[in-house]
Amino acid sequence: MAHRKNAFHVFLVTLLGAAAAPSLSVVSGGVSSAAWAAPKGTVLKIAGGKEIESLDPILVDGADAALVARGLYEGLVVSDPKTLEPKPGLAESWKVSADGLTLTFKLRSGAKWSDGSPVTTKAFLAGWKRALAAENGAYYASYFDVIQGAENYRKAKTAAERDFTKVGIKAPSESELVLSLVQPAPYLLDLMTQPIFAPLHEASFAKHGKAFVKPENLVVTGPFRLAAWKLKDKLELVRNETYHDVRNVKLAGVTVFPVDDAKTAYNLYETGQVHWTRRVPLATLASLRTRDDFHLERMLNTVYLRFNTTRGPLKDARVRRALSMAIDRKIIADKVAREGQEPARTFVTPGLAGYTSTFAIEENVEKAKALLAEAGFPGGKGFPATTALFISDEQSKNVVTAVSAMLKKNLGITISPRNLERGVYYDALDALNYDIARSSYTAKFLDAKSFLDKFTSQNTYNNLTGYKSPAFDTLVAKAEAQSSPKERARLFAEAEKVLILDDAVLMPLYFNTSINMWKPELKGLHTNVLDVHPLKDLSLESALVKK
Image (cartoon, rainbow, N blue to C red; front, side, top):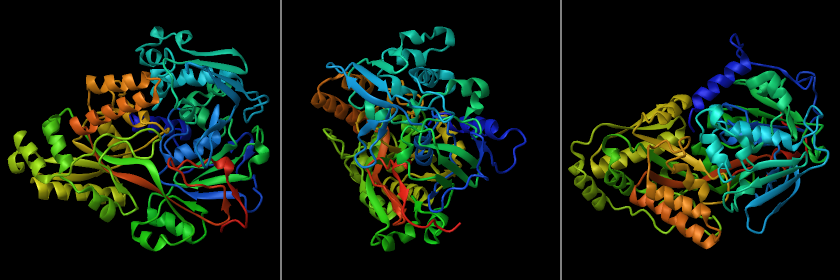
């Protein structure tokens, strides 16, 4: 994701101040987290991953940030915890026009912010306008592009060039919101569960600016409020008593601990200090598979290597195809990743209703050698030193190392794995200052578009490969404009073939799985293909884990 490190740096400076202490304990809504006492047994404790970077809804990225943000910012629709179907959130109802080009939402009567003020459509206009303004660097601003005028607005170079009245987002009243679309978008309701579609509390933002996300300033619409955030220690949520459905919020609070190390997270779980962990050491997997509290689920997630198509030998599609053909994905999935993953010879994962990839990458070392020779590197001779970046974790290191070994053996080329800190890694991708990078993508909604439009020429925040293909862009645009689901899927499949097989911009490795371990007393948690778990639906039935 583009500009991630810089956004995080600004966020931390804003949150902590220039002379920040190592940890932070603050108040929310006038209630001190130290003074607040949850009823025993109702605070859910979670071993998260790395520190959450930002809780600004337009900058939220990553599984833990999304988990927390969905608990803080309820939008028009929310996800069903089992089926992922969109359900009413702040919108009590909606209707779609017969031609699929107009969506009309009716806001829930009596919906309130956590400060007690009413939620109106004006807050959605403000939040979405902010998300679309280019200077704010919203990671997923392109999600709005299906709305008339949204793409032009977000691509305007200056504020003077922008006119929000030309964007198809209108509020005829304080309770009615109308979206006019460029083309039918059957995925849009699923997409609108993302935090970037949250409303904005204008009074708080006007008063505090970017500091509106500090715990003592943050005003929210969701089932929980942000009580405290002690960096490198814990993040605490408390139940939002002004939430419209507070009677069905069974948890009094949620605490998320940032834990970099999978072994540490697992030990916290095994010793009863957390109820739920999403990470376990690879060495424990074999023994855990028979346990009732261990849950493995196929995900709509692809782990892949991305190529920088702008420099060195990797500018040549023949080289990229050769590298992609010269590895054994089954060995990588079964023997290296070792979490029940399946080899990926396409990019879009199986399991999307109505969509099937029309190709599969051929794994053929002899053909790969021939392609490499054709590109000017017979037997790997003359191939320059090349680096493959990854963000530190045991599995990523093992996967990149295995790919490197296979390419050395099969093609005679040297790919050197290089571990980078998260911010440095994304700076390198932003600047196209890399050769190869290990990446992972989880679909944001149940549609092939979620995978493919990341790599259009216009999607500069997410492409990060330097790839620009009019043929690919045209196929994606035609697919998006289709009202026929069958023709739409056909065009997306053609686009995927261009991206992965013809141009080989990415090297898919495996389709990922999610791992969750939770205690028997935690109820309402369900595995699903997006690994999305609304906090509102969770409850605890017995005594709390150890303090």
